Every structure is written in structure tokens, then in C-alpha cells.
Length: 335
Ligand code: AMP
Ligand code: MG
Image 1 (cartoon, rainbow, N blue to C red):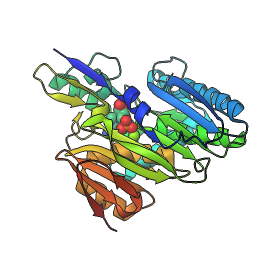
Image 2: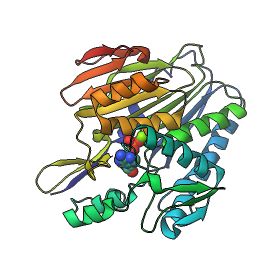
Image 3: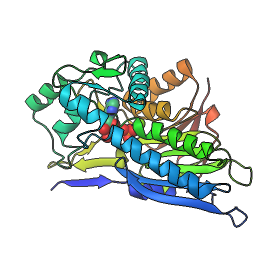
């Protein structure tokens, strides 16, 4: 029997810590379902309600642009027509994502949609594809063949984009910008495994963002203290199915094989200033595995990293500011 798991709803409920002290000023909030996950917006003080409503409008706009299932979205038009004039948002996201595809040597590949379809991940019909289905799908993936010219995106025949690895990170930054433009200086935005902090907590201290335990997703491994940053986690536990033989098949795919990544990692958390980059990297570094992920961090910098291995060890870069509250041990990674 096949079982499917989707832990984002639970995650959203546990990720934000320390945002409900009695001294906090009045907050305005909204919970929404978009981008295939629960999204929660919370703004403190100022023009909070107006800001939250404006952010929700922007979220709906982004959903309309990036949804793979809405026929008139930019991504659906590229996927069905092979070439489409796109919005500024789409051009920006694809351009930046292609940079990460390149810098991770294809561990991120935004043309993986045919492979996701072969596994049934996006259609709710998860199953193990046959070898020929998989090789046909893999033959239609290669991020190097995506072109952007004057706002028009083109892909070869049969190629299809999947920006699920990075759109939520972009959305976090965009929603924070809308709130900020509406005068809010303190807010927290949670999009499934993505959290975006705007400013500091209303009392001036850092936001404390909980990091889920990948082996027990309703528990926390610990927390990171941030302001004006994104904290993005990718993990097999967030979405997977158990096949007929009892094998767990996760939604993060190794583009070099078309099979779910088996890199020895249970989760990857990336903390940094650019939400899209954090989101794209969390997926790519998960595929790359511990040693390659740490090398990437050392070579590129500009972000902090928390890795949890399948055997229950947490590796935290020295700039992560991670407070471990779990039974697992932490190894600190230095430059
Ligand atoms: P995330 O939750 O940010 O790690 O993104 C995972 C989603 O990105 C999956 O559900 C797929 O839609 C897509 N995806 C899976 N593997 C890859 C990959 N190696 N490169 C790009 N996108 C991927
Ligand atoms: Mg990601």
C-alpha cells in the first residue's frame, strides 16, 4: 500500500518561537494556503492590517504567476508552449535560479518537471516510474537549455520548468518588502519550511526561528536567532511516499539519476539575506550531501548552514548561531 506524507502544515505550526510574549504590541495576522503549503503572515504595530492584506494580495499575484497548474501562469505557458513572454518576477526568479543550477553544477535543475511528473509527485499519483519512463523524462531535463531573451523564456520541445525549489524563498522576500513599504518594521512570514523575518521582534531582540527535527518533524532540533533573514529548510521528511516494497521515496531528486536524492542527509537549513538563494541552495545542498555542501559553503560564503545527517549528527557552520535543544550532537564547521 502506498502512503503519502506532507508535513508542511505541521511544520508551519511549530517554526516560530518567542513571538507571543505578553509585552508584544498588537499584531495583525493571516493564514493562507498558497504555493502548495500553509502560509502565515504576522506583522506587529504600525499599519499592520493594511500591510498583511497587501502582502496577501502580492502572494495571490505570485501564485498566479508561478503556479504550474493554473493554465495562464507564466510557468504553465512556458511548459505548454515552449516559449512565453513573462513577467519581471519570473524573469528574475529564473535568472537567479539558473545561477544556482550553474554554481552547484546541476545539483539544482529547474527543468526537472518531467521527472517529477514521472514520479507522480506533482499530481498526487506517486509511483516508481519504469526505467524507460524515467530515461525519457531525464532526456527532457537540462537547465543549460533554458534561454531568456528580452523577457521571453524558451525551452526545447517537451522541456518543462519546476520552480518549486525556490519560489517560496522569493515570495518570502517579496512579502517582507510589501510589509515594509506599508510601514511595518517587525514581521514574521512562514511559508512551509521557509521563514522570513522582517526586522527584529517588537521588543528589539532577534527572532528565534525553530528548526524542525527531520526524524520527528513536530519536535524542534533547536533554534537560530535572526533579523532580516530567511531560514529555509529542505528535507526528505517534508514530502515523500512509501512504495509497494516499503521503500521511502522523497520529493528531492538527484538530477544526475532522476531518483530521489540519497546523499546521507536528512535535512538542510540555509540562513541568509536572500530568500530565493537560501531556498535554491537548501534543495541543491541536500542533493550534494554533507562534504560537498560544506565545501560549497567554504568556497562561496554569504550564508549559514545547518546539516542533519541520516545518522543523527548536526553540522552547523560557525556563523549559524544555532542553539541545539535536541538529543543529537552538534559539530561546528569552521571556514
Ligand atoms: P524544496 O522543498 O525547496 O527543497 O524544493 C523541493 C521541490 O523542488 C520538489 O518538490 C520539486 O518540485 C523540486 N525539485 C526536486 N528536486 C529538485 C532539484 N534537484 N532541483 C530543482 N528542483 C527540484
Ligand atoms: Mg528549496
